[in-house]
Amino acid sequence: MFLAIPLVSLAAQSAARTAPTPIGAYDVVPELPGMGRPVDIAATAARRRALLQRIGRGAALIPAAHERNIERDYVQDNDFRQDNTFYYFTELETQDAWLLLTARGPDSLETVLFLPPRTPSQERWTGLRLGPDSVAVRLSGITTVLPLDSLDSRLLRIRVAGARGGPVYVPLGPATREERRISDLAFSGGGADVRNLLPIVDSMRVVKDADEIARLRRAVNISVAGHIAAMRVARPGMYEYELEATLEDGFRRNGADRLGYPSIVGSGPNSTTLHYDVNRRRTENGDLVVIDAAAEWGQYTADVTRTFPVNGKFSPRQKAIYDLVLGAQQAAFDAIRPGITMRELDGVARAYMRAHSGTLCGERTCDDREYFNHGLGHPIGMDVHDVGFTRPLEPGMVVTLEPGIYLQAEKLGVRIEDDVLVTAKGGEWLSDAAPRTTEAIERVMSHR
Ligand code: GLY
Ligand code: MN
Ligand code: MN
Image (tube, rainbow, N blue to C red; front, side):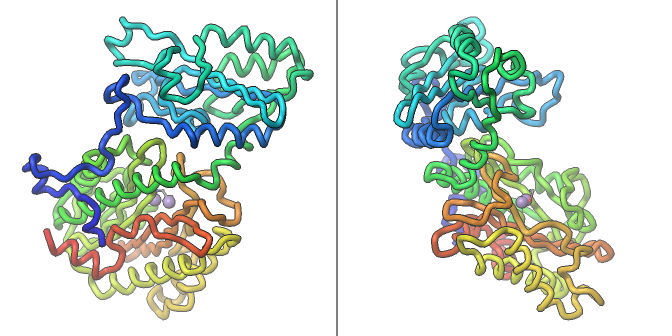
């Protein structure tokens, strides 16, 4: 089944003319060639209307992210990633913008997007930017787009109106701590009733809409392609970073925007370290390799782990542990239904392990927290550990199932992590195009 993914093989890399179309081929907005992506105007408008339903009467003020100072922050990858809250309501990747939503009653929502002016001399350095003009209107679907310098007079009116104008919701969190406009409102607002927007938006983000699910599927498919590529090149004696290079090449080659999180490539003893991301060890014949890595696409990230023998063949002992983890994952998947919680699914996976451990983990059973020392999973979305962990599952939520067994004394770790869409009837595997059984993994690795 995994062959349905247009995987970029090594052969295709050296024969670019025959390369299949990348999964994430860049969508282009004609006026912003190679920079902007089309916005799902209907989806973002529906999210803004849903926010209106939640807040009733009042206003919401949401800043975009700013470019980071790469020399000061020493960022890993890219110096701009949009703020999740701003993205949720606009899907714009533009920086330094603001969104002001004003709800005057049940059916009255005014949406204003404020954008800095375009500066041609700066665009010689940065490339094209969105400015307060008709391109922004067309791209965003927001009919009122104003220059950023008109925002402060609007905010002054809100401050003067004070509590009479209704509550003003702003995101109060680490990302906005240094926003002068927000602190002016919150701390010298002249009596404005300032409230935190984040709990409301976070609760809206738990159940994904069709556009979000499409983005997650794409991020997952790109991630799967990278995992398969890494399995295919693996050989004893390779360095972990060589596997990482192939993996991340597979992501980017298929259109990933960036990594969802730093790639974990742990071989041998490192397979038992949950968030090992140094990736410097040389693999040895007989090692298992745990790769926990995923791509972000369109602001949404997958979260996928595969474990495979670097020499392409599981030992009987490795297979026995692997199959126990796989069985626990399947048991949890089979138990997925609307209303169940992640904590309950964790219990299902542990009960399976307990019942089927035999003597595999010695005197204790393998579900012991000494061996399975993390939770079963979590929601994914714009954050890899997304909002909504404690919410009973609902159709439209997307969660990971990632049981593991880590036997440090044997330098043997196994984790299997898949992304699952909750449906009305149960779950849908999103990432099962990455081989999951020992047989499927060995088959892929035999085609090296
Ligand atoms: N990749 C981080 C996690 O699995 O939670
Ligand atoms: Mn995870
Ligand atoms: Mn993971």
